[in-house]
Length: 199
Ligand SMILES: NC(=O)c1ccc[n+]([C@@H]2O[C@H](COP(=O)([O-])OP(=O)(O)OC[C@H]3O[C@@H](n4cnc5c(N)ncnc54)[C@H](OP(=O)(O)O)[C@@H]3O)[C@@H](O)[C@H]2O)c1
Image 1 (cartoon, protein in one colour):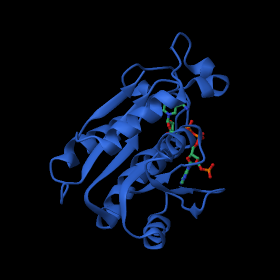
Image 2: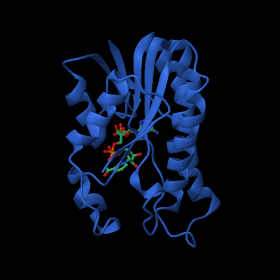
Image 3: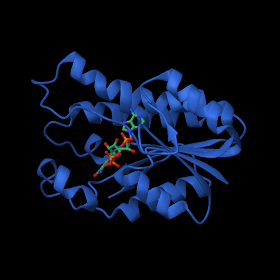
Image 4: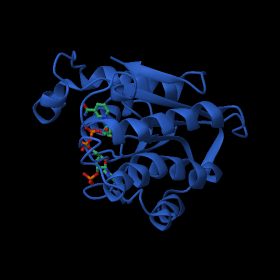
């Protein structure tokens, strides 16, 4: 099985690499420090990545940025970060990646808990997460050739407590390995159109 992970050198990406390394041939992609360089905010860059990588069995995305700020502070420009990276970046991976995914392959995207359990300063990220989840639910019923699509919505990770802890007071952190298991379930299971929570 050939598995392409976009965001492979991030906190979640590294855990998915670790979880899947004995099961799949993994191709690691990210903006920097990976075998394959890609910027998911650029359709040309995504297209170039797929041409370089060729056919795959599974596509995973653990990349996607968003601006964290209150709604009053949020400007249309700052809100575009989440739209162009976490939302359209991931959707465009699907649209441009489909021809490269083999029959009965899979796609797994990333969302996050704050779309269902809101935090202060999380509206822009929540907007992107909700869009990704809706796209997954909807596109699952018409993806061709038995290709499946799911998303994973993690709680704050234990490994990210220092970085995100102040935003998520009272949330129970989840180990990265448990989040990686949700990706494994999506890649190796049979379900489609699901949003797996890793809380
Ligand atoms: N960590 C958490 O607690 C948590 C909880 C719930 C949801 N999430 C979501 O999960 C996703 C990943 O989180 P993380 O903590 O693993 O992030 P992270 O450690 O910052 O890693 C992000 C990864 O994505 C890559 N990336 C970022 N922007 C990119 C772009 N435009 N094009 C291509 N690759 C790009 C980075 O590559 P470079 O390093 O090369 O730039 C890196 O590999 C985010 O969307 C986040 O909102 C995280």
